[in-house]
Image (cartoon, rainbow, N blue to C red):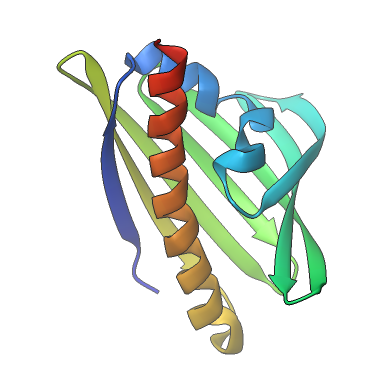
Length: 145
């Protein structure tokens, strides 16, 4: 499946954006599906953790534990590899580039999934990506005040 990207400019320097994105606990609420982060442990060159995504359908919900491994180049980029139940694999690469007094944040996502989950997984990833970059902008603006 081809990848897709989205870019947003946030009102914070790359170092602050990187520090926020490099902390797994920041993803609770930064990603609209992530309701918990657990089992955070350092790895060679990064961190591994389990994020719990909550999918809702009316009054019902399903918690989906996903394994994430994140590595980075401080103040420049972060790469996350996600393994989800159902053989869904996602790779997200975030690139940080100084932009005036802020940072241009580009996230590129690649997904591999069985044919019957591919459309759903890609649709969810696109929605989450746009929300996450908008929320990151809100958080960085609020932190700068």
